[in-house]
Image (spheres, rainbow, N blue to C red):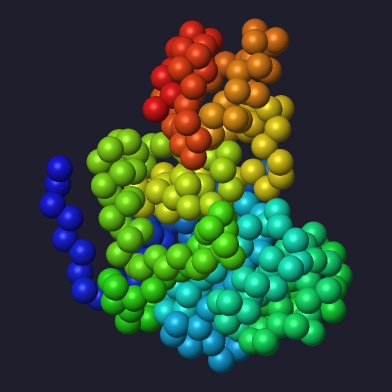
Length: 315
């Protein structure tokens, strides 16, 4: 196990995004999403643009920025752009209802919400009950009464210096599932992403810049956030995002098209994928070198049947 020396001065946007420009990966794909290919240069500039949008809206260090977005590149822009200026990102589960969003937004004290146009209607019943929210930025093509994120990004500067954050400063919150009461905001520091990326992604899984990662669990889950975003960015690899529902057809289509080398899912999904593959002998996972399972107990029969069908262990 290599020693991990984390400097006191640390901003995750610098070490997960900016460093790739300095290390010559500007033109390498960082994110694949449907027809879009986001290079490391595009990611770097878009993160900077988002950070500048926040500064123009008078956002300061430790202010919370809520994100209600599917798995799309704008999630990465908002997530790292928020932390780059020293503010705190708060990704929210996109599968919930209006009362739950009311709790999250008021509990976090978020001043800004970045929301996808497909989810805007969920805000209508709660707009007059939001205590701290000052601005809503909408991502997508549908016209709304709120400012459009794509237009704001196009107009913002692509130059931005990272805030002088420290390793123990808060980087983001993730809300718990609420099994013991109301969901609670769980605090993650800047150094936490570095520790898990280095100790788990690089040193345990052996991820490298040659890997392309694909995760069925979504970015708003802690499991998916590492898998699909900061693990591949730490190692200089690429990630594939699936905005929609991870049906077996959608998952196998992505695997066939993008040839990921590392595939993350949960036992429930692995079961449905296996059932589909048992009916179609043409399905293969030849590009995949690692299949990772978490979040639920892994049944022994599923482990054995998956290995028999695909020649891969579920780790």
